[in-house]
Structures are given as structure tokens and as C-alpha cells.
Amino acid sequence: MNVDYLKINKKLSVIDEVVVNFAKNTDLKNVIYGKYITILFGKNNWTDEIHVLSEKITFDKFAKFFNTLSKNSFHFKKEKEDLFEDLINKKTIKIYWKELPIPYITFSFTHTELERLTLKTFIIVFLDNIKLNIRTPEIEIPSLIKNKNMEDAVFLYKLFLDKLDMKFLKIMCKIFNVAQPL
Image 1 (cartoon, rainbow, N blue to C red):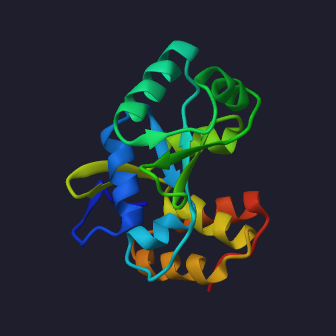
Image 2: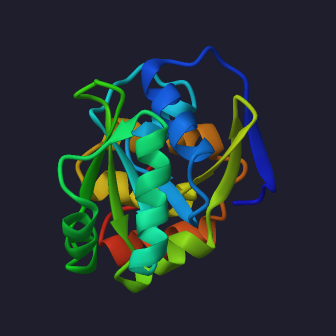
């Protein structure tokens, strides 16, 4: 996408508050993806999950991440050693904010080339003056189509139409084995 960064000014919803508070309390290289991206950009929508993809880290760095989040209103359903083992074994973990059962963060490490590409090609968005890294529309749109979420894919396509790298989008559509929208 042909943009350095985006700034969003809006009244924060509960789901935005979860994202902003998570971003404030982590220094890990990570990227937000999934249905929340459409909510971030103003689509009247809801999702229980906020997907976050992170670089692989050591247990010590994970323990610091776990402890920092735990001190700042986030909680987990397992001990940090078990969570780290799940992440190493290519599973996602759930991170909850305050006492809310939803929305929650599904957090995972990168394992595939596409996931590593996602960590290299993200877009920076400022929400409530907090920096968020989000997956580029060129990867997010085909992913949404693959997951049978055409309405959200079309929303992002129309929103970013004049800024999309169409060549990159076409490549990603082939990788996801989906037709390019519109």
C-alpha cells in the first residue's frame, strides 16, 4: 500500500480500548489482522476476537510480556510456561482484558512465510495516539475472501482502492487461491 501511516480519530469502542491498551503494554513486533481491521476503519461490525501475530521470542521475553500485561488489566487462563509451549507448538493463546469474556485477543507466533511477510509489510495506524501495526489490505483482503467474509473484503477494497498496490494484491489473491474482488 502506498502510504507511510494513517491516523484515526474516533470515539473508542470497547474493542478499540482492548487494542489500544494491548498496544500500550507490549514492545513486541506484532501485527493486528482479521475482522477488527474493518471495525478500526469505521465499519459497523463486531467480532469476539482480535487477531495478533507476533515475532517468535524467547521464553524470557515472553515472561516479561506476560508479566507486563498481567499488571495492566490483562489476564490469561493458563500459566506462562504452558502458554509459551502452546505458542511454540503453533497454537494460539487467548488474552483477556479486565473481566470481559469478549472481545479477547488471539495471539500467535509467526510460523509460515506468509506470516513472516505480514510482519514485514504492515501499515502503521495511530489510534488515540497509540501506534498499531495492521496487516496490509493487499494481504488482508484475500484472507477475508478465503474465510468467506466477502462483505468485509469489499469494504476494505473500496476504502483503499486508490492506495492499493494492485500487483501485490493480485499476487496475494493467487497465494490465497481466491478471485480478486470487483
